[in-house]
Image 1 (spheres, helix red, strand yellow):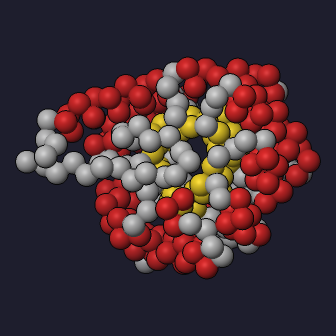
Image 2: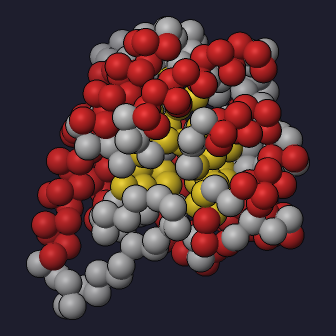
Length: 288
């Protein structure tokens, strides 16, 4: 018999006893997969509500693209993009995450009702972020990070990508512990595509279980990423466009759910919920 271990519980966040689905709302003009589609607040709110209706457990709202080479918006512009969306989604009953590296954005988002801060820098872009999280008591996603979008791919060099990412994440987690963030509210993210090559991403996926040594729940964001586009390349060798990578993204959701990953960050919510339902049904066959 296979022992199906219970998923970790993060206080203040949904606890569905299965892999959670985090639906992405990019309120940006330049995100790699859907930049510009949800830039206006009303469009972003409508999209967030659609994802909620499709079964998203958490809606992740971001106002800064973190694709390789992206230029950072001004703080005032990022606030303009995300705050109305967060307020309306919270009012509609959604559990909302704010995707930001900036303390000022996170603080205003928490005031607006955000229950989770998704910081792709893991507290390195602005050390004040960790103090804010400790003081506010919200949940926190700490991602492995080596630098901002404009030059992060130049830092994709590892002796052993899995061992190195684990070691660097451990340092980030130690700093979060030092400033007083409750360890049961910290979720780790290996940072697929952030200072990682396609081969690095596949190696991380293959050895994901090694991250258990950190003792934290994990969220994985691989939806529509470039390494899938390259896997599914067109006959001329060009990567498949982002929106045509959803089937492969859903396939990975199935794999991740079977591995009992705490959460997946996705663009296609309904398909991901379906994939998780299949995985859960299979897992019940082996529950002890």
